[in-house]
Length: 276
Image 1 (cartoon, rainbow, N blue to C red):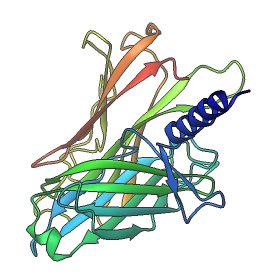
Image 2: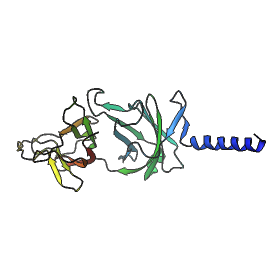
Image 3: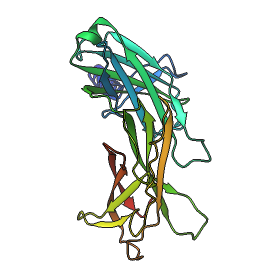
Image 4: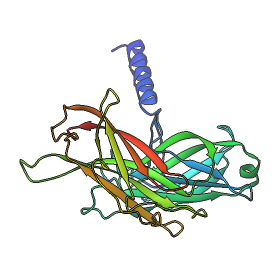
């Protein structure tokens, strides 16, 4: 091979290596010292402006990471008022709601306080978020628009329930609810603490958890009651409509409601039937 051909080969090799390394950077957490940058946020970071003008950051996310180990060990957040000033760092050690091997849905909950002068002066934020498991270090960037603090922070989920071979499919839909504070006068007017409405792709309700049921007229409290406590609301569905017939395969939508007064808590999630 002549010198020109050798030069072109080396140049091509350098370009390939450079392009291949665009989505990686150095990691002090991993043995291979490699962090992988992903294009989309792995989960939402919620920002709430507190009364002292600091910003509370929090997240609730299911164990859906496409990594060898799906348990989140650390979350390191580099944050600032814009993408050019990510000067502050917040380390979060998430807690886990659910028991691996027992509960179908495991939720990781994290919270941190951004309390610098930059936080107090900001109207929104940009964060570069490192998610560290035992096997991987993933990094994503996200914009954070500050939200009003709600009494409950709710995270919807839809999880296939494994069964014996030949058993009918079942899916669990529900909410993980984290208590932020208890508002004055909050209550449940009946013994119904959680309601689920499932609709098909055309928007028609095919099943609802309160159909044909009579609930006791008793006043109860909305769980959880203690600050930072977690409560798991869950409802199983076997894919049958209100007439007892199996629904067709396809995309479905669940509206999830804690029917509290004076204000209910609501969330929604889409899923495929049968679950895969």
